[in-house]
Image (cartoon, one colour):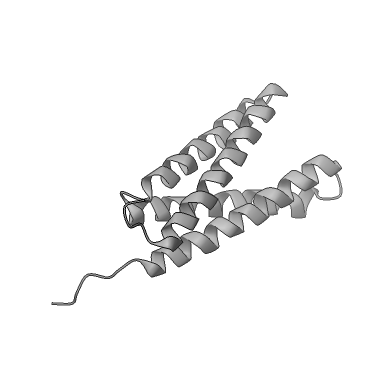
Length: 123
C-alpha cells in the first residue's frame, strides 16, 4: 500500500477488525431493542473503520483517534465486567472479554505504529 510502514498496515487491519466487531455489536444490540448500543457501538465502529482507512493517508490523526476510541471501549467493557461480572450471562461475559482483548490489541498496535512514525529532521 504505497510504501506504508508494516506497523501501520498491521494497525490498520487490527483497527478495522475491531471497528467491524464494534459495529456488529451495536447493530445486534439495536436488534434487541437498545438504541444506545447502536449509537455507541455503531458510532465507535464506524469511527474505527474510518481510522483504519485513514491510516495510510493521515497516520498520526487516525492512529490517535483509534487509540482514544479503543481506550474508551476498553474502559467501558472493563468497568462493566468488574461491576456486573457475576450478573452477566456467559454471552455478555464473552462479548466483554472480546471487546477488551481486541481493544488492547488496537492500543498496542496503534502505539507501536505511532512510535514507528518517521520524525521530521531537527533544524
